[in-house]
Length: 76
Image 1: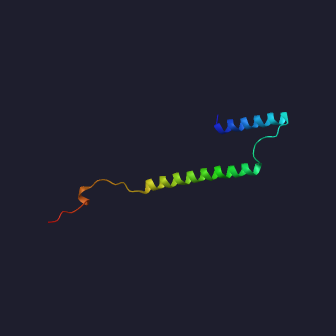
Image 2: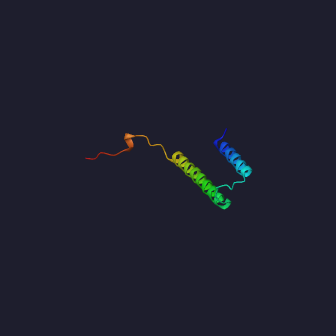
Image 3: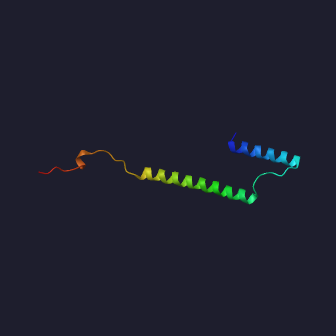
């Protein structure tokens, strides 16, 4: 089972317990959670773009093989 689903299930279970006990949750306001979600999404997008660009750069770089004939010319 996914770690995210386990975390979500645990959160829902704790929320139900808080509701049954009529205790206010110590969680931050919803707007703060939306901001946190935005931060996580931004981090994931940035990581994906960076890895995509690194992959494209490694594929575009020509392979460098040692070729003594193309090195230097000896004069004199």
